[in-house]
Picture 1 (cartoon, rainbow, N blue to C red):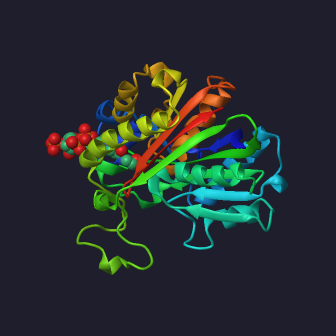
Picture 2: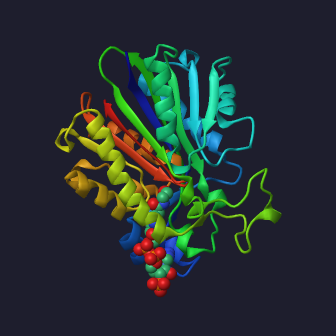
Length: 322
Ligand code: UT7
């Protein structure tokens, strides 16, 4: 038994913030942002609009695409690092909004890798016959923890949500998932406090904002992603030439180009969406997947390679027969 992607959906908040808008906020330029990152615009949640709001819209679209109703869902997992509240988890909030009760509902917090982590857990439940309709989501409102006066981070991030419905199948769907993490890198990309660690315990000058040593993250990301995509291919005894589409985490165009080059994949076979919404953390992979499925690039039977890398550090990859 395999789990198979039955439908996908996505949601971006309405408000768009362009590189030119940012030129008026910090000492940056459209040229710098496009050249160094590939990003052109990002979407920002409206005041009061939360991660669960975006997750709900993406979820409803995925359910519709899969031809199922919320009542069919028997497993719900949300990858997010920007939950509405500490608890109940976003899975429970979403479960309530969808009017379904009783099934497992939880969130997974692994920064930008949260969706790939969530997908791997849902895949195991579906493939083991313990779930028949799993809703897997990556949703974030990173704009809430970005310092809008810090040009080294504020130009990079945006808000959004992507969703996938997994169902059992005798035919191959998700072939394998590969996860990794290394907490030694905890100081390169982090948010300085939460509940147990209070604001007054945060380091001098950290503030209530996401902190990143971008240059150092970049180097480890490129190297680690090379390793994890190769691990996924080796585990399935597949060569990169078998992969139809690379669906990478959308953090930086240069990181994506490096992974594609390592795989020997032309950029035409890489789904790129970061120009339209920047780094949306856990939402980036499922949103890119949804874009390319809905515009007809990805077709049934195509082999997809999903990958992500983020704070922790955490990382993951998955080979999927769509
Ligand atoms: O999703 C989780 C994982 N996260 C990532 O993968 C992010 C990884 N890192 C990156 O994407 C890149 O490192 C950044 C896009 C964050 C930065 O690009 P970079 O090529 O590594 O630039 P840099 O940090 O080495 O900075 C180069 C210069 C610096 O100026 P000096 O010291 O050379 O005078 C920065 O101060 O660019 C300057 N700079 C900017 N200039 C204009 C940094 N941010 C900006 C900005 N506009 N927004």
